[in-house]
Picture (cartoon, rainbow, N blue to C red):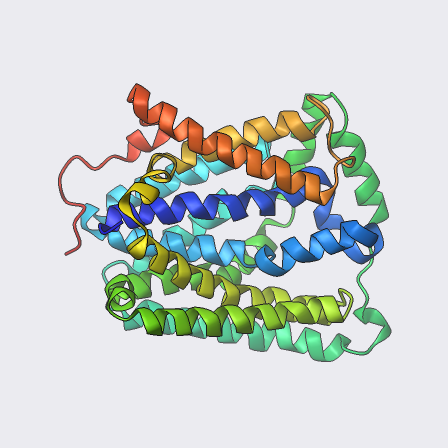
Length: 369
């Protein structure tokens, strides 16, 4: 995987699996309304820990890093072209949020990417400094005060919202598709100002950092020094995992969760990004080719995955919502991921480009300036 395009396709394809695991938590149970330490126990809680430590709160920063990196790699296409692509992705995500999966990350990611495009033609240090400032402000104003206020106090325990749990379980297990759509709209449109504010500090900094790393030619730097790459990954991943373990040790307290989600997850995501860049550079060409068809159609396959998962988990299909174990969910997601790889090859063999064909650059301007 020596070309920039090949590396991006590989990274996109591999990153799709942790995205499936992230979404799977919401497909299988009312994940946004529960305290897992109340809702789960025994082997189920252990399975959750295993998945959460390695993916929880790290997937979105990882996807944002990849998005920022891609935007800068495609800066030769021009801002107007990239704005059209980003707006299209936002609209697709909004439609998915209403008709399929209310917790779809695409709308928020697209909005953050639109802001990131303002930095497209700047020098590397502008998005880098902006990302650091946003992150430091977020930690200083939004996170640390809450940690200090709640740590060790009776309010440091998170409780499940039982009414929301029962409501979501009843609706998503029902065969009333219009009730599901209504609930999706309610979830998608709830507290829009608060969501936008959160995106500014939890997604945008990582989009900007991804752009800065591309401008710094991080791919060439990592390729030239494999030992440094491994050291960076071990440091970042190790530090991120250590911070994530605080959430487990404190049994999911509010302060422990805040620290793990807002600091541990992003640090771990940066380690994953470094690792993916390294693997994309050293992986044999034939092995990398297994992921290229999926990576080139990742948006199409992501939409197809969500359609399939609705029928697996919701009442309009097999009604696995609330009944399936976390381990079984992971197995289902692995099977869906395997189907996505096969689907990529079928699309390639049939000469079908998918939705991504709408974004094709036919002007040979996609090279970096």
